[in-house]
Length: 231
Length: 180
Image (cartoon, each protein chain N blue to C red):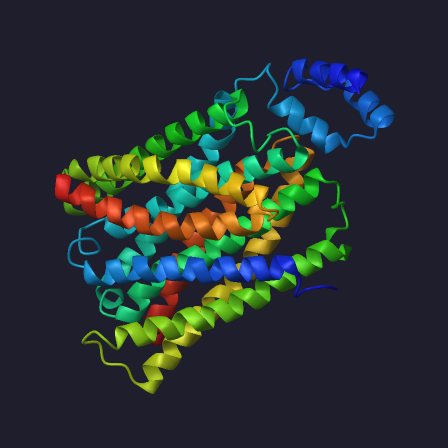
């Protein structure tokens, strides 16, 4: 135990970008996963934690903001129609939240799977990945249905006139939006996660901004398109 | 394949929380449409501003979770360099991105309408300051609490952050509008 502590301190002292044979040695001798050792090295005393996080996150956050703003631009384009459909105004943050949430869950659980060494090149054959996809997909459909119903009921309390056709349109918009985006996000999170992990970056810092901004952008654009198509 | 396991239950429950938060935020939007959505450029700023909570606090929670699972962060020892660094970075990033979003909305208004609306820069900055002063510490304490209680924070924190974040963001934007 004393030995391993001494070795871990040495790992922490390794310069961030530098590969060191000590990592391989500790991995072999003490059966510690390379992922754990990577995390220790990434946020060790040799690194300024806040500087590391800011440096790794700032570019992707900037890109994410710009992507979101473009998504907003699409919705700004159909603003006049959009603000007149009360159920959709209520649904806007809900859909954004849900799609962003699924992006976050997929990303963070996939990052943890990577750190735990549960994923390899043939990710599609792994049961953990299949379970994750099916869980998110089933929950996404149920929640889209529930939230649309709630939004429609709440809109009934305002002056907005709801009939069966409008209710069906709102329901369809929510379902199409969520099914398409969850599938796209899953593919993006997995491929980007594998790529980043191979590049020795912490996927936690990249995947969530990528998936949530794409979720927002996709949601805004898809909503704008669906509003034009349905209304 | 075990699909309907503890994770499924955790995600489903957290999604109910998320929907509730989103619906409340949606009601705020619907009620204050004239104050919020009808401001030119607001729909450009709003998605990024709402999403920022998830991006920054979500990554913060995810880093904390990875550290907790790997045993690098101890749930009972919170005043460490790694946690302080995470706090500092999250606050800095939130304020920086708020300013950038404000600048984008300002530029849009200037290019499209030819009006230099400097308040569009101040608005997200003030709102971001208020929202993050609440959201970042909340993220930290809830992640640690969930881990201590034996839950996987990865399953719960995303929805928790986005739903609480939406409410704090929209309320903060309304407060910022009042201040400006």
